[in-house]
Image (cartoon, rainbow, N blue to C red):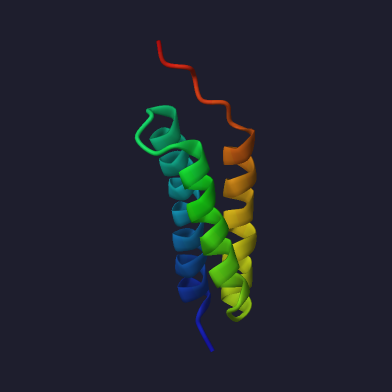
Length: 80
């Protein structure tokens, strides 16, 4: 059985990774490094793969779906 400290460390790691994913995908698309459609495709594949895993993967899939939804609603600025 994991200790409370171990559970908190795992939760903290997951939260940090989730926020980094949100910021990273947003920045990559916003700066024109990765096309929005490609970023969406990467996230869709990650969700699909995680859906086939255990309980932790299901949570990861849910979190990645949130990142995908936010990215999908993002409108990158047009370059001039």
